[in-house]
Length: 416
Image 1 (cartoon, rainbow, N blue to C red):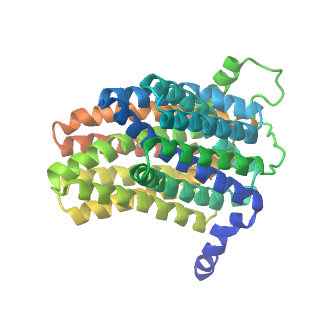
Image 2: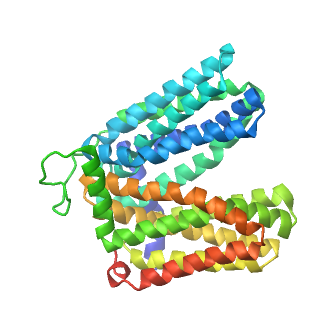
Image 3: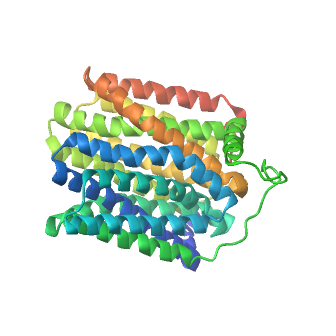
C-alpha cells in the first residue's frame, strides 16, 4: 500500500514529461478557455445590443443546434482524416470568427443577426473539434499512460471551464464586450498553433474495427456504421447509457435543482448557489486527479455501477436533507465520483476501441449527452415546481435503475 501511494504522484505526472502531451494539454486548455470566453461574450454583447433575453436565447440556440447536429459528422471525419488537422482547422476557423465579431463590434457594425450567424458557424466548427480532441490521445501517449493523461487533461478542462467565464467577465468589465471576442480569438489561434506542433504516432487499426478491410463508404454509411458498432457492443451500450444518464442528471439537477435548493430550501441565495457549484467542480477535480494517480485497470463496469448508485444516493440526500453543511459535503462527494470514474471510463474507451472507429463512438456519446441536457432542464424545471424532493427523487430512481441494469450484465461487470 505504501509503495502504491508513493508512486501515485510520479504516475500522475508521467505524461507531462512528454512534449507532444504538453502541447496537447496546453492546446485543449486554451480551446476550452476560449469556449468559456465565448459563452460570456456572446451573452453580454447580445444583451447589450438588444436588451432582450429572447434574443439571447436565439443566439445560444444558433450555437448549440449546429454543434449537436454535426457532431456525428465531425466524429466520422476524425476516423478517416487526421484528428490533428481537424483540431487545427477548427481552432483557426474559430479564431477567425471571434476576431471578425470583435472587430465588427468595435466598429459599431455588429447586429444581432450577425451574432446569430457567427454563433451558428462557431457551433458547427466546434462539432469537428470535440470528437477529435478525445480520440487524438492514443496517438499522442502510450497505452499505459492513458489514465493519467486523461486525468491531467480533465483537470485542465475543468479549470478552464471555471476560469474562462470568470476571466471573460473581468475583461468585459474592464474594457468592452467586443474586446473579449478578440481575446477569445487569441486563445483559439494559440490552440491551433500548439496542436499543429504535435507529432502524432501512426494509427494502429485492430481487427475488430468494422471498416478495417472495407471499401470507401459514403459519409452517411460511415455514420450508421459507427452507431451500429456502438449499439452492438453491450459494454459500449452501457458506458454510453450511463454517460447519457449522468448528463441527464447533471444538467437539470445541478442547475435548476441547485438554484431551487439554494433559494427555497437552504435560504442562502446566490452565495450558497456559488458554494454548491464550487463544491461540485472541486470534487470533480479531486476525483479526476485521484483517478490519474491511482492508475491501473480496475473493473470499469463495477465503477460504472458504483457511480450510478453513488449519484443516486447523493440525489436522495439532496432531496431529504435541509442542512447546508450536509448538502455541500454530499455535492463534493458526488463531484469526486464523477471525476474519478470519468478518467477510467474514457481511458477504457480509448484503449479498447479501434482508432478508425473511435471518434464515431465518442461522437455518439456526445450527441446523446447534448440531447439529454435540454430534456433534463425541462423535466427538472417542471418537477421543481412541485418540490425539491420530487426533483431529486425522480433523478435518484433513474440512477438506481441504471446501476441495477449495469450489474445485471456479466460482460459489463468484467470490463477492465
